[in-house]
Length: 303
Ligand code: ZN
Image (cartoon, rainbow, N blue to C red; front, side, top):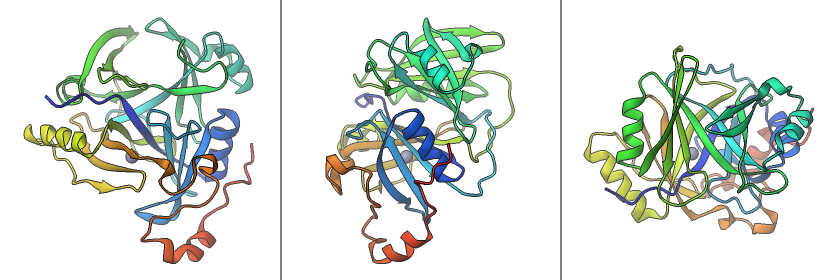
């Protein structure tokens, strides 16, 4: 078995127009915009990266904002929600600040959870955890995957990514299976939800994929070979400028990525000025003027 992943690297989701997305995640949640670049497969649209000040793996949330995206639908075969850690006792303050009532508060495995929607309908959760910073949000606490039959999804996580089953909780007709990465990083939890539902549909307010960490290229190769040995169809390595990526669809239908820690977000701008300028990969640099002119504004946030 390959070395276990330390945990989540990033979560990538789809939103509507970018200005409101920036307003919510930087203004309301207080994340830092650590990289403003374009969708490498569609350079007429933004790819925005939020995270902690350094853009550390396990804190990175990325969006493909599309001005005219139809709404997605939560359901089987999709990642339902991502959760950030916040300080114990902070959820009432968050609920007041973000306009959510006390009914948005619940309990999960003994920790308090505030459930929110971002401006385009994506489920965002804040979970109290003693390792969170005193102010603001910390790393990801977890992601929740919603699948029709969790067994095969759980098996990929335990047999190939080094997760361990650490609990099960029932809520009505739903069962939540908790898995925890054994690789020793933050953002260590994946919950797999078994609950009746329809098929997920991609669109604004939905998660596109979740990415797990590989410590380097050799670790990524090791994970890729182990997955391919049991029949998973994994892409070759793709250079994403800030990490190297491989992708495969797990048996429950969720798109998984494995992303390397290096080189990180300081590869093309200084750590102190992360996210302040449009950064383009080398293949698009010759077209910078045209790309800049076509991108919708980020800073006219109507909040
Ligand atoms: Zn990704």
